[in-house]
Length: 214
Image (cartoon, rainbow, N blue to C red; front, top):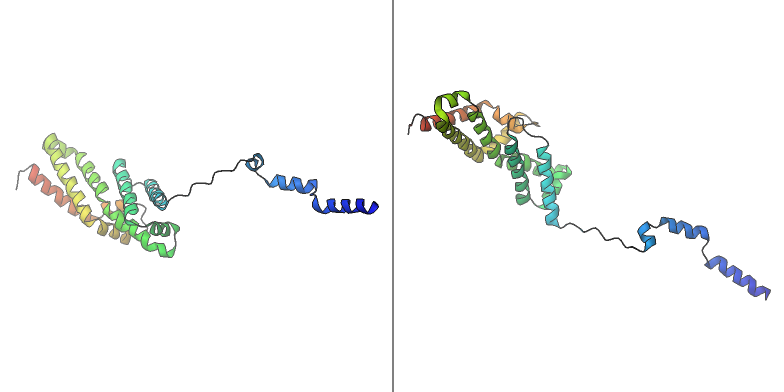
């Protein structure tokens, strides 16, 4: 009998967990686990959703550094254009590489800031030309409202077409002038060659809509 009691006590020591062990294990559990609630797994984003979100991040970052020379609405169109071009022209892997800041991603960063941004320049450059022309008091006084609007629309549309054709070259030149410009659009607008080209287009628009020259 004495042997049996000793055997039972020994078995209990090896098989039953101590209160301290039980409490330690309990403390490691979350509230949901103690209540028997299984949390739902976070839904994994599809590659398309992730690509869209990363492209939208580029839009948000672009809007944080607006050009002081461009109307806000035009700059918003510019950033939206870049975001859309990144989404449509780059793969998810390309965008991830670009945002990772790796040496391999430098090619994609250059593609975004020069080629893609260059293709979107038509929006801000057109609106800049329109705003500059409309605000010219001499034009309003000498041309009258109707002709002034015709001249300014002509000049703005011409500036937009010029940017649509030469935007990538203009943006590349801006970065060549200043390796890391805070405002590449401003660099373009302040360029003397660009200014002379726009002045020639404006003069032609005045000849057509004010002087009625062919």
